[in-house]
Image (tube, rainbow, N blue to C red; front, top):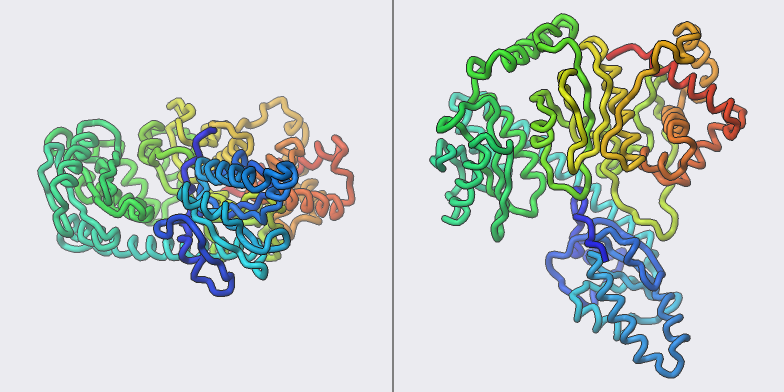
Length: 552
């Protein structure tokens, strides 16, 4: 049996939260009662659901498969059922499931005693789902709890960012940032040299084992090694961040943070503090001409200069835009990817728009260039029965980067990359869209890296004047102009050769939703989307809208 995947980055839901919901009426019958975290829900009546489990889910079943065991065993039904349920519980635990929910009715009046005993033996939390509670209500409760937890995380991150920014403006900024960081991660923070010497710390000093491990991490990142490193001790997660722009050797500094290992937002907050401390401890005069040029370009942009005016300060005339999303099965940090790309010009990806449920992809993804956004998003279509209801990371990249055109960009373990073609500064907004499209294709095709390719001078698009092509595209696609969701779906569906599954993956929606949207598109356009000539003309129109979009 393959090992279960690591749990997703979405906030877990404590099983105790579901048990406390009086409207659900859930009751735990077996297994551990503390520290059980649910990431999603999966419903299955299969005798062996293990191949369809990702790990971290609550598996719901009404026990339909148990009747087949009794029927096949005949007079040995009781003994056969005991052995079957013991194996069922063992396999479910091995697959990484967090808990098992057993529904009362329509098949069983009570939870089988053999299942209770098997779950106790294998340490699998067993929850009774009463007859009046549909499985969809349990799924909805998990989704609601995930959304609320994600909202709390985002609120905490926002408050921490404001506090850290305010601290950085105080007379002793490094000390103030360390103190603010310690308050918001509820842990110990310090600036350490490679030899372990402290140059500022906040919060109570940790025990000797944690302090020694912190010194080792500071030595690793301060000796020209990775830009970040982590270690885990009982009850404590340690993270060290090399401060960019720092001096070498004994003058190097590392931010070290000791926090609760079950507090993912603490690492995001620490990353913000590391950036601020890099600016505070590494003045522009010590950063060298390249970093000084980047700083000067930023200042001039903030003061109103146009991108083309600051382009000479960036050093390279052409830049490649990279969109990257971290894969679920990796612990690689964003700083490690930035180091591999060889650029300091890295920014976190945009978050979901206000009103979009956290932890899920927006059904109305950003509209194609050349169209206007509409507020009449169609209601999402839920997953079919038996499908995992896993929260999706969203259509926004984990990070975006600008890489000088001369540097080679290759696949990086643990990341999925979308790469644009090199472009001058004035055309970077278009390159950004191309990188985003390439990333979506990479995610849909389960490929580690996809590069955007612009048609050559002898392509069919060169035979039609851009203005004429744009006007034709607007007229052809006018019935879809008020629905960016439909335009985006059509674009992905055509680019992925009409694949329902790959389009659903790229958009983060269910395949049935894709089918419904394509059917609606065909009706609005009054055309046959199975006709290859129609598909070709629509693709030409969509690409014309993309090329005709105003930059910015």
